[in-house]
Length: 500
Image (tube, rainbow, N blue to C red; front, side):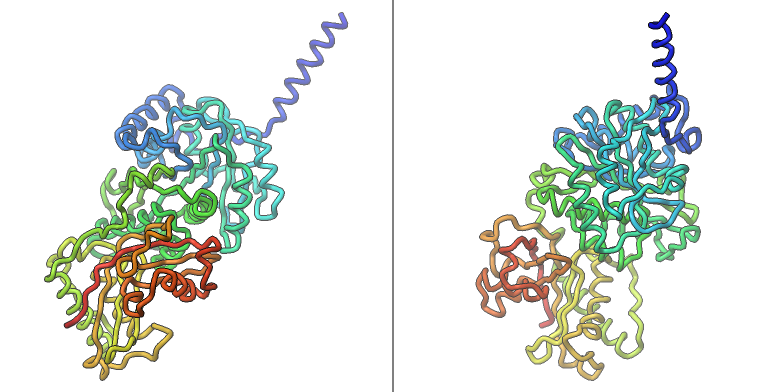
């Protein structure tokens, strides 16, 4: 009789403990994705089958992180499938999900301090130990109401439970972050990442349309959206935290997971410096249902050390401008200066008459000299605009906005000579002895500061490699020997041409 009573007692205790579990219930199942287990399985397998073709060349890499979209599966499921196909079959025991908060605004990061998350395939357990580590810092907290109907985490869970049924998750909803917050965030993130951890960043990209209060393009909208997406994709592939923030500042692109992506780039650049990203899928909602004035972009990335070997030779120029294209850009720069300094407006350009090279986004600098002396030099390190637009804008910037000089006056233009430098993508330099003066330009980053010198600068001043390195460090406002103390050095090449 005593044994029977003890059994009843422990059974009631077990039931009571389970009843008290804090479980985050599904909020968008049956709408954003199927709630029926069988239907959902068939859908996921279809997405993963599609993704296998996209992820074929990177399947064997050790993948540390992925960026995948979070729209309804009918829109973004295929793009998400590409990311998850790349990690299918790998041994992840902890999956950190970093996603944006769509329904609540706050400063900091709300960690999903639940016991489990519900999915049609069964519940996913939360890694409570990792959650408790994060919650020891004031940047992290648990705002339960932010999680209840949020889809950006939930949309990832069926994929995760289906592919990694025994893995534990660390759900993070990111609100607004200040620049100083990223250092804290990645330092805490490092404490919970090991060799069996996958970081999943949940983000859609450009949201275009009046409903999103973002209509920067009036003509050739989809073409220009995709150009802009390709530009930010290059920055993300280069794991460039500073340039990503600069891109957002320059374009105000409506990337909903901007803070989550920035955390990932900061983490990888600081603690996994060999990792590089690779864009493996890209389309827009307009490609799925047609363009009706709105569009959302879906980009999928993987991050791995192995990507660097695949991208060997990426320091080469994207293209080579022929003499006719060079002369067009020099003439365009001069016409832009003449028109802008006299009327305050830019010349009208017929894009249909431009070559593909001239419409390709890439880094470009415009240098102005007067009687052989520098009169202004400003540019874009990466391609935030098509090349011809970059030349027009930076011709004006060099004339009017270089803080080292007084503004160029219209009367001076007859004495001004124009030089244009078209840049290759930046490549992190792992061996400083490979830097070649006259061929390579330098870009330095350290502690939130950065500086750039074009390849021709070292030649003009007669510097050797060490002097060139010291000069670029000084340009960034850093000590001349900072390249010996952990500063990141990037190299690039440039096609340089000037007025005769």
